[in-house]
Structures are given as C-alpha cells and as structure tokens.
Image (cartoon, rainbow, N blue to C red; front, side, top):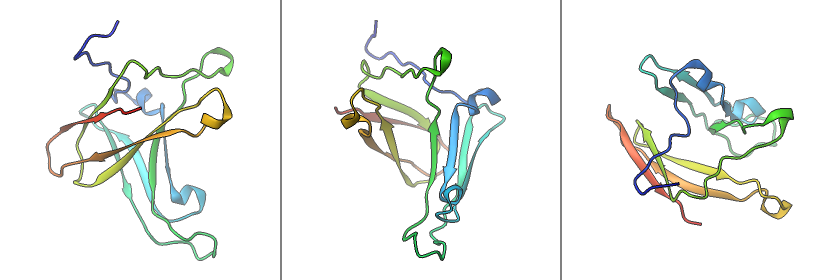
Amino acid sequence: MYRPGEVDVAWQFGNKEALEEWVVTADADNNEGFSNCSLDLKSQGTGLFSGKISLRTPKDGRVKRAGYCNIRTIRPRKSFKRETYLNWTPYNMLIMRVRGDARSYLLNINTRGYFDITWFDIYHYVLFTRGGPYWQVARNRCVV
C-alpha cells in the first residue's frame, strides 16, 4: 500500500557492495573519444560520480562527435539469470538528493516491454544542479 508523501529508497551508496550495482562508461571505452569517469565511495557514505569530458574525436574518420560519460544500474536478476524489473508504476515522482556542479544532466529511464516495439522506450528528465557545497533535493515529475 502506498501513502501520499511516502518515500521509498531504491539506491544508496552506504558500502562498497552498492557500487557493484552500477556500470560506469565513457566514450573512451568504445574507442569513440577521450572522456573518462569513475564512481567512488566517499567516507561520508555517499557516491561520487566524477570525470573529465573531452570533445576531441579520434582521427579515424568514423566518429563525428564525442564527449559523454554515463552511469547506469545493472538490471536485477532472479535465479537462473531470469530478468526482473523494478516496478515504478505506483510512483509519480523521482526524487534525488544530489550535490552538483551547476551543470544540467539528462536522466533516462529505460523500459523493457514485452513486445519488441516497446523495447527502446525511454523517459527523459533534465536534472538541473546548483553549484557549491550544498546538497539539493531534485524532484522530477513522471509524465506518462
């Protein structure tokens, strides 16, 4: 049963095992650029996603644009490597507690539908961060 104002925590960075639920990639991992990034655990029990974006492209004639870093969760599995999903249907808002650098970020929530026509449906949200030493609570309303 879900109550108004109730908050469920999906991910926390309290220990090293929490970092194993995430995959960090950059364009350099795919030989498409020279960006790099990492996800580290801070002593305060928070996760730090950091890196360097490079817009320089490789001189191979194939890549036209470069410069991305990405963090994503590993899809949870049941026994025998069966896929399971996080049920987001009862929620209408994504709330994140972040400390940013005054840049904008793009949040993508992937869906994996039963039919192939819905395999690549993605919900996009812009995360605007404030700079400085203070934490902020970012609320993104989910519109379906």
